[in-house]
Length: 235
Image (cartoon, rainbow, N blue to C red):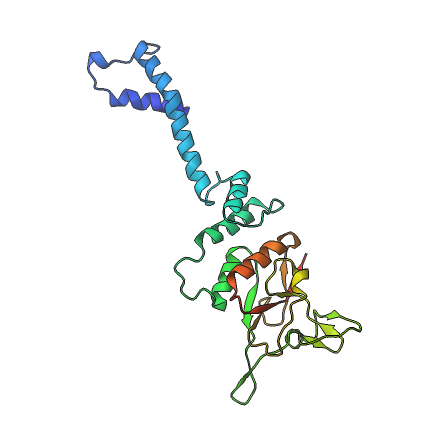
């Protein structure tokens, strides 16, 4: 039964049962309701479409809807991704920051990243010094020397350089990682953190076509005064 047929059937049920309100098939009264049914069906279809477009929580939410919401929310367009991944990212953005008071806590940052379908984990750069105090570590100390970039010659000041190797994959102020490579880190790394795999020092994987989206989200979540060391492989 079509939507127009359902509306006509409903109209018949709403009339009284007396002879004056009979609606014979193909009669004038039925014709009036069939004509009205066209606009009523369109109004119903449009209302359902509006509801489907408002939230990315249903199968009626289309690729075009995702593109529109990414533009409205100031998100990086992700046309190459699956619709499910785009819907997950939009849901996270719509719900941010919610009622969470500790919005810059590492657990909240990790939760938000995972809500956007990034399987990564956040670690604070705080370690026991064995004497009751605390120290911060270089990323190469945490990874056992893996993940560094070799450099040759040139003058270097501050930063995370160690025996001809430095850590180039950081998140400070820029979506473009090349621009962040010029960021000069202080000797005190207490305002840094690590983003990586399920254990400290392990690497996580992020799709290469989501790199800018990943970095944009991190910039939104992290305290502005902090810098993140990314233990990330882009594939």
